[in-house]
Image (cartoon, rainbow, N blue to C red):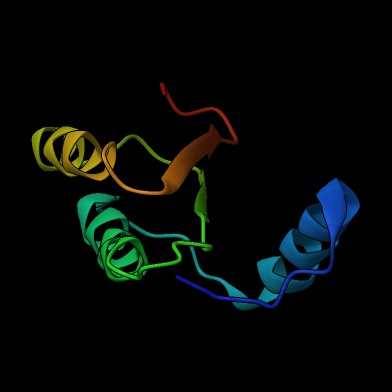
Length: 96
């Protein structure tokens, strides 16, 4: 996984993806539950604040089929009560 600072807007996301892509090596298995749970912990902490002013958006761009579907489904259901959204985008020829 690679983490990059994002400029504002959709153009910023595309720019960050293009900048990060040469530094990322794609490989399997494709486990999403660890990253969903990781971001959910941040969202849960933010939700405990009296003035809950933070909202989290997890964007996952993947070239593979989810390897831990049951765990990912469970993590997404748990995260659904938190101030966060999860967007999963499949790229390439895999069966998403």
